[in-house]
Length: 97
Image (cartoon, rainbow, N blue to C red; front, side, top):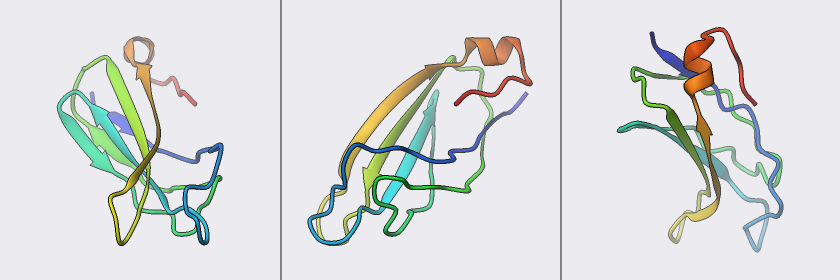
């Protein structure tokens, strides 16, 4: 059964751009699969996304990294977290925030 992941939003502690607002995007890892959201231009501390990703794996760990998209330098890591998916696999209709 495929795993569907829909990153919705983030509540970030600070803005990472010196001028203007941060341009956040997230990368989601499940097993050896990786997918990247669109960048929320000027998303600042409250970015929102409307991407939908499908993973075909039973790996129990989902990892999310949020970055600030920087045009002229290396993207800044804003934060990251993990989620154990075992409960989701046991109850396929479960949703997690």
